[in-house]
Image (tube, rainbow, N blue to C red; front, side, top):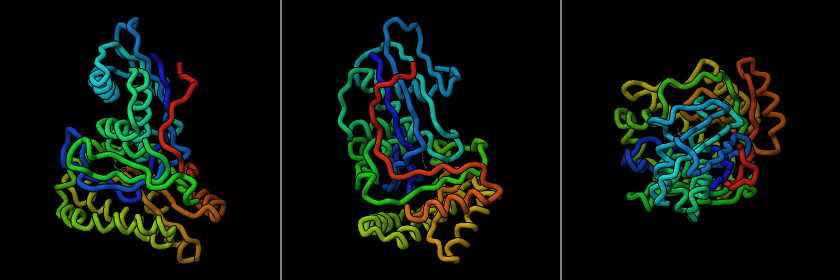
Length: 325
Ligand code: PMV
């Protein structure tokens, strides 16, 4: 059977970093995110007894099936569905991959929903979120709609994401400033393993519960100022863990810092904007809908910014009827 799904990436306001179980991808802490409308993966999966081998085509390029993370994920689905049929996967992103825009979140969410459907499984949102988590942690947050919480949990069954609010709950915007399309040198799967080497990681974890409580309060109150201050402080704290790990993880480029400083200057001048950054060089500039045009045109004026992608809050992963093959 063949199925197609499209999935949004998500931006974490409170970030997942470090794992208490590598195999199950159980995070050291819970996290809070928003699905983004314009960073999307579309994936078609077909299981067919006529296929002689597994195949994966990513953005028009055939990938090696051996040791492939997508095929490993399909193996989880085959196990659940009790099938051993070969698979064909075709997947496309509408944005650059491996630059810190969380393409693994949208990628594994789309693969999970399309793969489960194509294998004839009928899984609940919670089960899909758990399955997506096993492929890539942050992917579990791209399954439910809008503003999302991933509760860390101590077992596989208790570690999944659920929607806090639908996308239209709050009209905030994520203006992504792309400063380079260079791929990162250390991917997050390896990066998470280094979290504990930072002398500050235990301090971060000890403050996490309160941070999550606060961000949920600010989202509930739609208090943009408090929310913005907290997400920016969180992004800087997160990067301080990366920078002080052994080996150190420095994802920022000079252009990244330029955009960060620009955001701070805009605030001094009275325009309310805040930044957050994942494991990459691009900057997510968060503003309110009423300011999006102004913010976008100002960000575009920075000569180091190559492209801007405007994202509103979005639904989670959905099945689609148009297949990629
Ligand atoms: O799901 P992973 O292994 O790609 O890790 C994601 C880590 C961050 O993007 C840096 C933070 C997050 O919560 O999305």
